[in-house]
Length: 507
Image (cartoon, rainbow, N blue to C red; front, side, top):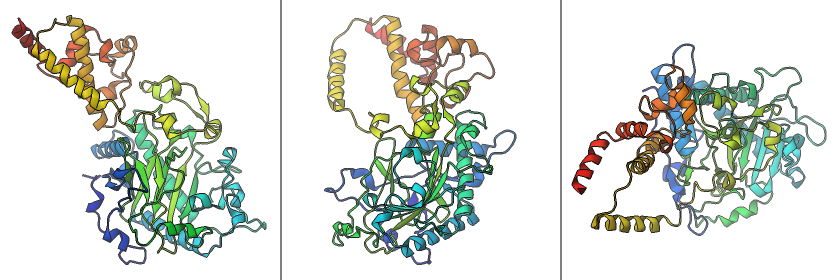
């Protein structure tokens, strides 16, 4: 196939930029966390992220090719399962990013760090003021996070405190252009998978190229974690050389970017993202030389009415005692324009169900200044119910009791309703989860009015999950009895005959 999805372990061992093997990667694929320091025992899981080639994601006029559809499917399944995917760039672009990492490493290594620059340098880059989110540029440092950054934002020329223009890492404009193109290709693939118009996200994005006096909303950041020469580096000693497997993370765990998409290329592994089961997954453990990690942010979650979940991530900052350069990375954030509005209108137009929380449009500038937390967004996703075992035991006992004595038969309509709910949970939801589809049903009246039309808005999702023809795409609980029977027969062939057999045995 033109795309491929395989385990990181199948890739050759990563090599340093000077051509020598990387001893950290060759000695162990993953550094298992020390139990006293980390509660997430699953953090050593190596994810089989979906891998797609950028050339296969390029859309063309006319009908989509089978290769394009398969590539988009692999991308979306990976985003649904892991909230991240890997994109393979063309060789020239990959070489540009590797050169950019070299330049960023040298930039931070040669730059002195002073407490006066913490959170303030480069035109307010680290001011922490949410109102300045679209104006950050230049160098700033965050000692709490052991992080230094240089923000490149077209339209702004950062200056030093003495008024002299800063000398940035080389190649930033070219890398900004490359990663901007990649992010837009991925965004187009997402709009295709959701059956949205190809121009859906255009109104949210900056002009190409920027017009006179315009400042880019998107930003490219050269980042450096845990540089030993950074003030406060003595704190690194807590990760002693006697405990090589100790993982340490920045104070701000459970981070969620307010982006449409974030693209990351780093010289060392250390990026963790929570998967669908709430486990921390190392997503950049052994990337190929042309690979970058892409993950969605809150703005895309809001614009797609919750159909594309944002990535919850954190970065490892320990285990770098012997590395004089720290961990360097290039992070491109595709941002919506501050004057744009996020709404679920396009999703509704495509026939998707939109919850009430997404129906009220919000100005991007207001959205950026609103606090969002992972616990508020996903209160139930990551914690299993404390009553699961009790419920399972109770259900088993009740089943044995029912098998041991005859009970009064349920009315046919109630039995149909319960069976339809069971099949929805056991069959349909399983198909949807595997394909990364969120089930948002139509209302019965609306679906009955367009069920026979050729361009019905729910056609795409019906086809994906094998919904029976002629049955309205509504929650099975609300289907008429005849439609419930058709639904049950579609997902459990022979259901009617089996029920008749059970009834004859009970007589």
